[in-house]
Length: 469
Image (cartoon, rainbow, N blue to C red):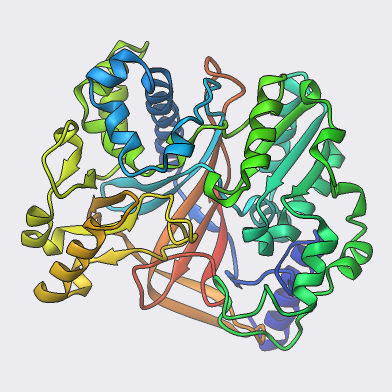
């Protein structure tokens, strides 16, 4: 490809994505390095992901059914999921089934490994924009629109914490896209939009370095109210959740429970109890990474075996790496825990990360990740001891090999470049209409970072939509 053609193709790709309205904080359009073409995976990977989705929903069904019951008490599940969780959050457990999640997968030679079962993910708008930008048939927006209609609802609303408000634009863009499929979408922020606009204007938030953006790019547009008008986003901003009829609404909670006020958490519980469907129910257990460690409890294994498909435990064991809760003392969930002494001895085999509830947003985006291979024996022992003493839960996860890949991308000047030996994460949105419906995947995309094992969306990461062929 000539330099002129390359510049044109890159500019057109960025323009098509920008036209959807996506952005991040003061960035307009793609805030990552776009791949020059979609990434291609074989159809067998699509089958693997669909099988994984079915198995993961089954795991969450078993956990959600038995948590808080006498069986959960006897089997150690209650103790496991309550361990170091703030008591005010332990009371929040909905019996609605989980209808959506977006795991983070590592690609490896022996399959796909889900290192996270992200229950409150971002990237809905970005994944849709990438599909349109590369000329692919969109599947994520139609999937959500169909789910809303199958549940006989009329509206879809993102209920967003202001602590993650940098993602506002991608969610508004997603809502605008939903309108093309006959669904009214809204974004309800946990503080008034005018308050957020004033905070940004006075420099109280959205000031790089922030997650994924180390410094302000040359063009930075953070006048929120002006951008709402310019993008015609005002119809999709919902000032008060009470304006919606819960019986007509499907909700997505964008933020963990410790990101919201007690009043808004209560409002969400009331909204659910009055007929609203939450894709990610008002329950703390699903945002606790300890839910992956529950696989080691015999009662959970038995629960999976008792479901219709007897291969569920085998299927989920093939896609979730060994995960255990770090615990300094023997306890009631020994089968699902790991002691500091074992971690210290097996440094090269494990990573550590916050399981949630740290009250500081360090449990996502790789912020708390500690990799044994990156430490000496002495510094690893210090990290293990410090993490074991934290007042919130921490999980250890067996190191899973991630395939190193080469990927072509456009740099900030729209010049074609190649990233060699990058570390990859595959992200797939998973949905089902109800607990008895088959699982579907949509919006599958790839993120690749160079020189690091901590892969996340950022201005120096390469991203591409996935095509299965």
